[in-house]
Length: 235
Image 1 (cartoon, rainbow, N blue to C red):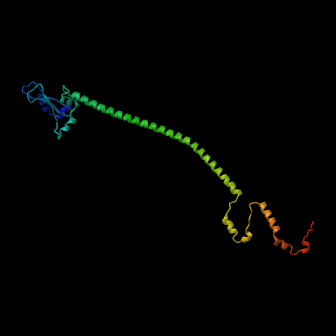
Image 2: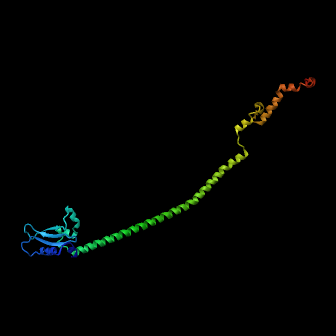
Image 3: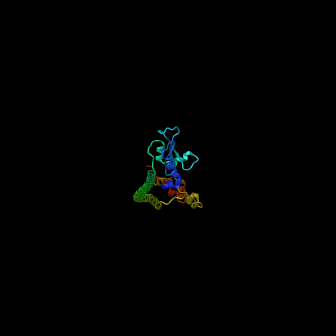
């Protein structure tokens, strides 16, 4: 009742009590009760039919639009206005319902905080599991990488070994260097022909020595022609 005293004067409250009496004849409007916002609820009739009274709500303060009154009407009084409830709600009932709503809000906030912490905990666990799995994969990849590096090094050494042997035993042929060395030489004297078959080359050289008449003439020029001549008797 203290809530109502802060909204209405004692004279107005006394007037509401007088208007709530139904034993006064020829009265067509009756006061029913208050809500926690200070709105008043009434029953009235226009055709003097007291068995079917109409119901209405009078707001404490006038608003520009009627829709602005809906947020101030409690569900219990709204049921009474729509005739889904016959018993008039009391202030004690409205106060208890408001306290229940406050407790529900507190419990909902606590549940939200609890589920938020639970979600954070689960996310932390998932992150730890993921990090552990990544560390394990990295530890498995390190020996594999070392093994692959060893294999690559072995293959590189095996490829470089024949190249080094070839370099040590067979010097690289440089045509430009050979051209520079033979630039000042006699092309006739420096020319050297190497046949593919050495034995065939020796045989050809011998035949050329035998069949060369100019060489034979030079050799027999200073000799005695009688001694040189070899006449074989007929058999």
